[in-house]
Image 1 (cartoon, rainbow, N blue to C red):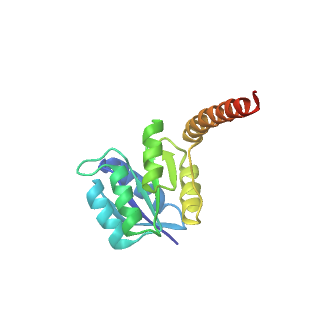
Image 2: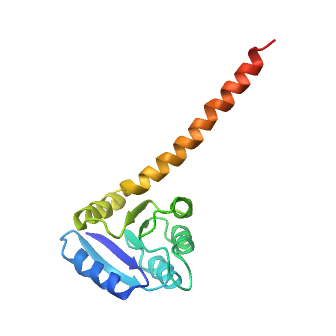
Length: 158
């Protein structure tokens, strides 16, 4: 059984997710919190397998809460569940220790698969977010060969 904590400041989202996740036989919600600070404390205390973490929350945002969770409960997989595809926010979340990044409009079965993947050591990433990461990486990779080519050209020039 995969244990899950839900951290989101919208009660209707938390309650809806709880109902959805309770419909699956292999997962159980063990705790909920409505702000980042309470969420981090809950996760460090309960040590669930996975936490679904919103990013925009009062008291402490999801990025900061993710950092606290990964420091205090390193075996808990943090999966961001949000509405934002902002590349900077994605990168800050992953840098804070999140292993996955899913969107709130994801299909329920895809969410279930993402939870199972995270619990098994995988990194569930929404394809829209993955594309933003690939584009960013591609931009970095594009600059690298230009730099190398310039250096090589200088080294070979008389």
